[in-house]
Image 1 (tube, rainbow, N blue to C red):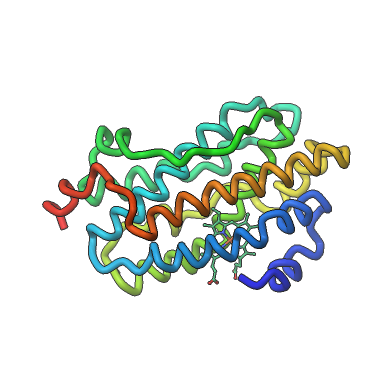
Image 2 (spheres, rainbow, N blue to C red):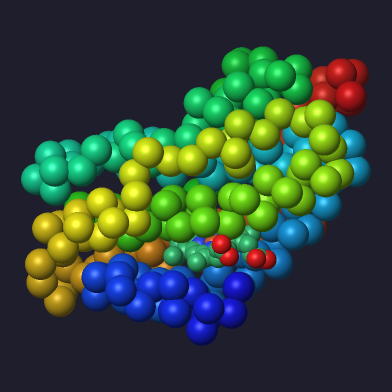
Length: 213
Ligand code: HEM
């Protein structure tokens, strides 16, 4: 989406959130382009590949997010997790838990401090803003497809998240670390999405999915 549109939405956001958005804005334009291609699904097989791409990202990102002790921020990172819905959508499409466990995972940047983890959390929360549109892209093509992952909102609001950033990132140095981590995370997502959108991933579920499609 155009940077100016996002900026107008973020005008009342805390400085740390605006700084993180500015750090990811260019990569976000690329992400949106790849998502549109990934969502141009023709059938259940295609849709499975799209969900498999999300799974590799979402599982890596949530696992890393939950590795940190968030108690000093008084914010619960579990309010940001969406893997359960994605797992269930894949089960509905015939991809077993064992097959899901064998899916390739997105390689994330080094995130070592809580300030950097806030940058990762920002990308996870931001990724839900486009979810309505992504939901529509799928629903218009495959009305019967399971869409829990896109349709279920997270349990944290931007207001709560913004308040958390003020507690977690009191110094300019921490805010810069968070923005840099957000940018590196967004770039990792973009490379991952680009690989999948160009069809360059041999997913282990392809054959099984063909049988249920
Ligand atoms: C993995 C990360 C992300 C993905 C896959 C993603 C994807 C998308 C997509 C596909 C759209 C719809 C674009 C369109 O209208 O054509 C969108 C919209 C948007 N994204 Fe992201 N995004 C991500 C991260 C972020 C981040 C970190 C932010 C930061 C705040 C953000 C802010 C927004 C906003 C404000 C919109 C507009 C929503 C609306 O019009 O209602 N996104 N995103």
